[in-house]
Each structure stands twice: as C-alpha cells, then as structure tokens.
Amino acid sequence: MSSRTVIRGGLVLTASDEMHADVLIEDGRIAALAASTTPAAAAFTADREIDATGKYVIPGGVDAHTHMELPFGGTFASDTFETGTRAAAWGGTTTIVDFAVQSVGRTLREGLDAWHAKAEGNCAIDYAFHMIVSDVHDETLKEMDLLVEEGVTSFKQFMAYPGVFYSDDGQILRAMQRCAGNGGLIMMHAENGIAIDVLVEQALARGETDPRYHGEVRKALLEAEATHRAIRLAQVAGAPLYVVHVSALEAVAELARARDEGRNVFGETCPQYLFLSTDNLAEPGFEGAKYVCSTPLRPKEHQAALWRGLRTNDLQVVSTDHCPFCFAGQKELGRGDFSKIPNGLPGVENRMDLLHQAVVDGHISRRRWIEIACAAPAQLFGLYPKKGTLAPGADADVVVYDPHAEQVLSAETHHMNVDYSAYEGRRVTGRVETVLSRGELVIDQREYTGRAGHGLYTPRSTCQYLA
Image (cartoon, rainbow, N blue to C red; front, side, top):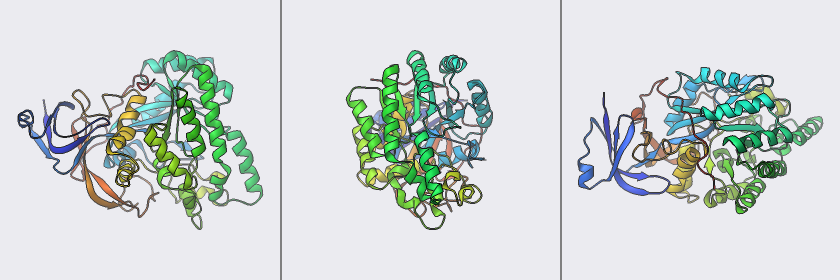
C-alpha cells in the first residue's frame, strides 16, 4: 500500500545546503524536495502533512559507535537493543552502528551471529555492525574478507585492555594489511594498554583508588603515542585508519600531521570529551565513577583542540561510544578500586542536542553539525547516500527539530535504561520534535509511536570518504 508524507515549511539542513523547502516522502524514501513557495512544492500531495514552520528539517543522526548489551568487567551495558534504539530515536538518531565481539578462541562469525541474535526484532531504528577483532590469525584474516563481502566493512582493534581485547603490533599490522586488500576499515582504540596497566598497578599500590585516578593513569601522552603508532602501522600496511574516541590534544595533533601528509586517517570524538572534563571524575565521594570511560575525560584545556579539529576536519565524526552502566550495582563494583569501575557512559539520546548547543555557542556551523553527526559517519562507514542526507532516493530518515525549544537534560526525563545522566541539569537549546525512520513516525510531536522490530539490519559498502 503506497503511502505519502509531505513535511512543509521547514529549513532543510544537510551537510552541504540550507534551504526553505518542502520534503515529499513516498514508500519510505525521499521522493522530492522543492523550495517551499514554488508551484512544484504546492503540487506535492500526501496522506499526511507535517508542519515544520519555524523548525529545522534534518537527516536522522548516524551514531557510528554504540555498545548495546556489551559484556564488560563482569557485567553488561544496561541498554538493550530495544531500550537503546528507542532512546536513540528520542534523540534524533535513526541509525546506529554497534560492535559485534569476537571472543578469543572463537570465530568472527560466531560473534557476529550472537549480535544479530541480540538485535534482530528488537530495534526501533535501523542498525549495522562493526566487528571487534580480538584474535588475529590466518582463519580470522580469511573471515574478514567474507564479512566485507556481506556488508560488515569495518573492524575494531584495541591497543588497550591486555588480556581482554588487546592486539599487539604484529596482529594489528596483519589485520591492516588484510584491509588494504579487501577494502575494510580498521578502527583503533589507541591507548598504550601495556604501559597503562603498570601505572594502574602503581597507583593502587600507593592507595590511590578513587575514580579520578582512572584519568590520571590513562595519560594523554599514552593516547598520543598509540595514535602515532597506529598511524604509522597503517602507513606501512597501505590501509586507511579510523581512530575512535579521540580525547587528547596531543592525539589530535598526530591525526592532523598525518592528514597534512595526505594520509587516509580519520578521527572521531564524543560529546563527553567536548562537554565534560576531569573535574567530573574528581566529583566528591564516589560520584566520579559515573564519568569513568576510556579514553578518559581530560582537563578542560583539551576541549579547544577538539573543537578546532572538528572545524578543520582533522576530526570528522562525533559519535557517542554509548556504553551505559548504572551507578547502583554496576559502577559501584569499583568502590575502593577504580580499575574495577565498568568503563562507559550513556549518551546516545543526548548527542544531537549537545551538538546543536555547540552551534548555538558558536563552536560549529549548522551544516557542520549535520556533517559530523549524519553525513560523515554515513560516508565513512558505507551508508551514504541511503543514510546521512536528505535527497531523492535516500531513506526517509528525517527529524523535525525545534532550534528554539529549551530543555534540561536529566535522568528524570531521559529514555536510556540507566539511573543517571552524565549531563544532569545541563540546559540546552534545541529539541527533537518529530522523527521518521524510513518514512514511519517513530516520534510524533514528542510522543513515541515506534516499535521494536521496525529497525532493519543494514549491510554497508566500504568507506566512501577516501582521498
């Protein structure tokens, strides 16, 4: 049964354009756009009209870094694919790329199948997968080729977490060489985990057990050193590289240098590094545990370098690394030993609003907001132009956004399945009003109308952002 929706009178924003236009949606895709006052727009007919006068009409957000139901530190991330994707929709995100995990001694296929089983039939919005590669050997490398062919085109490795996800330089090089041949993209958690473990052991021996020491032992220089090493290994392999959750100004400098050399090196940061700092880790009592994530929050002076990197395109993407653990019963596992605090923050619902606040504050332009939150992640991870833009033929993943509404971020009102907000009490300007996923209303005038199972698995092509 054919269905048509028209969104009238809004300011349509994409990464490249701004125009007052009406948007015609037919059978889950964008059929046409036309300037609002023209005869072409007047000729749009539909079963449903949405008035966007005074609002922005933007592509649904693409969050390329989430961890729903991730096992970590003896517990699990508190958002399921059902609760996490519902919260994402509330925040104007209509596609997530989550991480399937290869366990040591198991195949990539087993890990991927396990994550398909968690997600299938449960998601409110569309989803895709990256693959965490924990065990590099000949069979793993062959499997990487097969996964690329079927639309899992990015592979995450860790220079951190020895004994869990850690890969040594030889394993990293071999995986990068494979991606140089099969078109895959290596995503790197760049921290020198071997050195960090020494500093953790020494800090605990000195009785330094509070959450703030999590940030002090995971030094910015060890993020920068690992970032440099990953860049040079990728250069040797002839492969592109995407560095996740960049937090330190020294790491941004390594990325900028590589990009100045013309290398296919890309960087992502997250809202927590742009809006929070070591001041949060040092909150009294055990409150700082709420802000324990890796890479860690940095002193405030690092934020200017991150904003500058986003403006100069030395950083291309803002994702969330959404990996929530409740304060009660989960973060509390690390009372008396910061190294046992589960690493991760909630944020999938807050990203689009916080980045709009950055527009209001003058850090980035409106179009850059859409680029770093929608278009660039879609391009880097092979989802564009199906996702990340508003153009004929694209999926009708559309957000009507009120740039003037004010809200206060709070655990009392958010929809993530976690008992605190990392941004509790923060006042922001801008709010999602209506969300469509493939033309279906998921949020209608601040009412949830979506359903588990609407979201579909989305295979991806290879990186579309290469120089």
